[in-house]
Image 1 (spheres, rainbow, N blue to C red):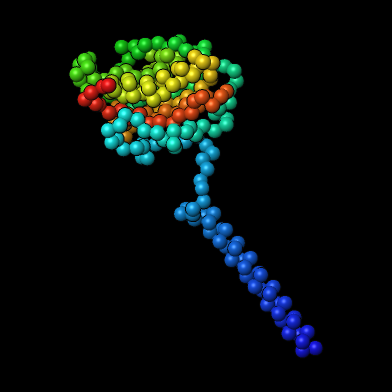
Image 2 (image 1 turned 90 degrees about the horizontal axis):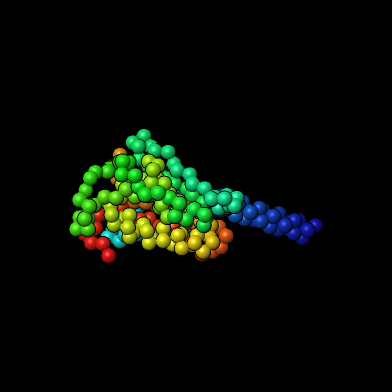
Length: 232
């Protein structure tokens, strides 16, 4: 009898130890789920537009890649109904441009228009139109005319220093997308200018593009809107 009683105690002790281990493991899993410093990988499942607060700091380069140069459009944003489209965001309370979204097809190539000189985007002022002036201002298209962007719509024109407009923005995205659509690729495209507080000239432009029917285009880049003394 004494032997069986000792065995029963051992069984009970083992059960208690197993239960304690279960509670400890459960507690650890809960803490990892709520702990913001957990080392778990974070997967972005929605399309993130860069905000002014976390925009890169200007260090002299014209552009910088975001997210390793990979776009973060979600599946719904990449859905293509066999027809191109453009959606201009409304002007904000200071009449600043906000964003443009587009699904760009071959049929939209070179269907846009030049910037209307009567449109004065926020921050615009007349500047000496010569190559020796680094602060020369341009009426820049959020969606380039070559990609179907309007130069008659206030919501598509933003004040840019000439270097940001060309060559920076052109070679960072517009040229790439233009070549792709001419080859028959359809491209999802977004441009978002970022303004600091109540500033009327944007700090830069966050640009994303992703081809929807092949893997030829996938970019995520920030273009700085800064004057430069020389343009290559």
